[in-house]
Image (tube, rainbow, N blue to C red; front, side, top):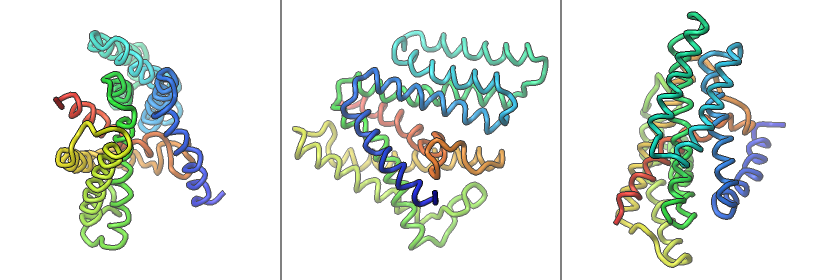
Length: 269
């Protein structure tokens, strides 16, 4: 199967699945999907840092990332206690192994379990806030739109490198194009909510600002996970999405954008 064919296949299957899970599936189904994504992301990050030889550490990273999703949604009042427990688990494992587990591997486990799990759980908290479930699409829209518009703007107009030592193909022109495309898609989202769903929870002006902010955050997320890949010399985190790579290749920006949207909407009157 060619790269183009695999991308078409992933889009044909993935987009309807995403729309169903976000818009129509029971909360338990969405929660399960988020647990699977978080667990896979935790595994991918630990395999990136440690390779596939540290099976115990890889398994711990995946399990803890999945548990973070359920814990941060079901028992948020004692989330700090769970994070402390994960800290003890990873350092306890490293101590038991007597120096075989390195500090960067411990940090990969903690970041993968705490940050990735907490970011994915933002979708459950957004749903619990009472917003229309269409707003759960915003982290995807304001991540994927930025990436798509940045790609085409960079392809046609790109001349000045944005971060050549991290991602040599990204350009300043592409970055600006991504921000403008994000703003346009955000405004279109507000229009659709006003026109077909009885009104939007956010106006056009605030949405334009939110879309620009999320565009910046999305690009930082993309470059952050690219930085990790470059440091450890891998092309993709995984192959769950075929030519699209793994969870961390496909949802790197979403992981940064989802908590931002959750926080902004929690501040709205």
